[in-house]
Structures are given as C-alpha cells and as structure tokens.
Amino acid sequence: MASLRLAMPLALVASLASVGGALLSFALPTRVLQGALGAAIIAIAVLMRRAKGSLHPHVSAGDALATWLALHGRFVEASQSQKEVHWRTHRTVPGIAVSALIDFLGELFGLGAGCANVPALNLLLDAPFKVSVATSGLLISIANSSGAWVYVHKGAGVPLIAVPSIVGVMTGACLGAHLLDRLPAYAVRQAAVALLVAAGLRALLAGLGIWQ
Picture 1 (cartoon, rainbow, N blue to C red):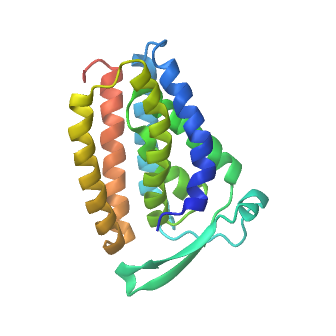
Picture 2: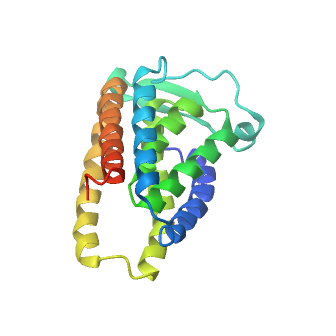
Picture 3: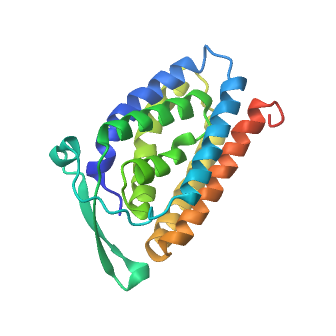
C-alpha cells in the first residue's frame, strides 16, 4: 500500500526541511510555536474527521507534475473482499510544500509531527486513506532520519533511550502494517484522528508549560 513513487518527491524536500528544523531547534525558544503547532495539528484532525469521501477519493486526472512523476497506482483492499483500488494524485506542488513544512516543524520541536503527513497526503493530494497512512510511514522514516543526524552530531541523542525505543517502534510498526492491511479504512481513520489529537494536545500543553 505504501507508494515509493509518491513518497520520494516529498521525502527529498522533507529531508532538507527536517535538517533545517533540527539546526534551528538549537537557536529558537519553542514554547509559543509549540502551542501554535499543537493547535494546528488538532485543527487538522478535526478537518480530517469531518472530511467526506476521503477514504477513497476519486481524481479523474492528475496535474502535470503528478503525471510526469507517475504518482498513481493500485492496491488490494483486503477488508473489502480483495477489491482492487486504483488511485492517482493531484495538487502535487502544494502537497510537497505542506509536507516540507510539517517535517520542518516536527524536527524543530522533536514532536513527531510527521503524523500530520497523513492528512496532507489524503486531503491535499487525494491519495486513498490507506495509501496515505502507509506512505506517510515511509516518508517519516526517510525525513526524520535526515534530521536525526543533526541531533546525533550535536550530542543531543541519548543511545540509552534511543535503542530500546527503536525496538518498540519496529515492533509497533510491524504490527501496525499487519493490521492496516486487514482493518477497514474507516477504522484506520478513527485511530489516526485519535493519534493526531493526542499529538496536538501534547504540543499544546507543552507550549502552555503544563507538559514538561
């Protein structure tokens, strides 16, 4: 379900933005911007929850850039009797710009805001919801790895925390990918909205000085 063709153009720009966000994170006070980012993520979650027809959007024709990059594909929806779903995207340039902004802010605050790539892929580029979730995981792994090296170089990485966390992340990712293939898209969207609200609240509370 993850599309390498869809992920790579976004990942290229997002990786550069992540490095920029990580470098800037050592120079800026973050509390006000944390609160603003948290409020924005919660607003995105509400928008995604209320969006109609976002589980399997229909795009009759992609824009010129999407057509040139061949941003289209198909996947088998196991939760719907092995139904084959064909998809294509559009609004490629705004999608790339928003993805870069998301990963810049996510790396700036270390908030894992990359989960907001799901609504960017789904609501802006009109990729099917499951494709958006799967591709977002691929995109986050590429972009966050780029920004992480800045923190490692600055001595801000703590291996004692990172190593066991990676084991947990990999275990959860394997389980999540297994469930994504089998759960209906509506259930996956409900879980994604809950995750976005939780991430947004965490950022908002951190900005207000309540969550340390």
